[in-house]
Image (cartoon, rainbow, N blue to C red; front, side):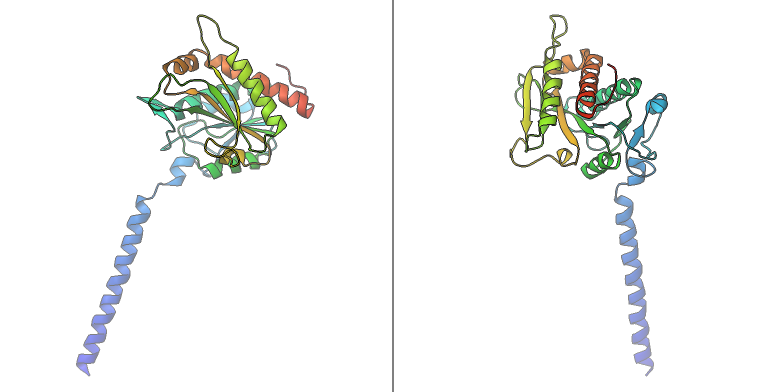
Length: 265
């Protein structure tokens, strides 16, 4: 009888020890996972800013989520955080996309346009969060800024746009205007990108779509030159303000012509 009680006690002790070990392992694994709160701000999402808050955007140390409302345009700064995108040496795509996106954002805001931006600093957002950001803001236009990559050949260069595989008229028209205007802004002292055109689907399947283009509004991905091309990097750096203005003005034309808005360039 005493031996049986002792055996039961041993089994109970082993069971308790097993529970404690499992709890310790679960806690350890949880601590190793990325803390989404520190990466994406208070609510793990994006930012909706208007012209009244633009002066505060550059001072924010983390992405926060403000109450979303209808807006005209959503600008997505591609990549961010641990997702660096493409790179060449110390140059990272996530930094270039943020620089240009913030300039487009400011230009449109200064024109009185309600514009949302996905991030204002080096913050990670998943593709789903970016799509949700656009859908939640009820915007008319969603543009994601990126840079291209071609390893092994630094002579491959140029800007291009990717739109939905169905080749929607509005997206194609706006993307063509942006590329034509950007690539015709060339001068001897300040060269710009070559025009690689508007493309549908993905690079591997014309009938598939990049996640950014799987949204309900007009959308596109703008690939602003190849980060592996010294020529394109020089054009990007020297024309950053010019590109932001060109993209901004073409967006304004789109809103005026397609949606009957009355914004002035």
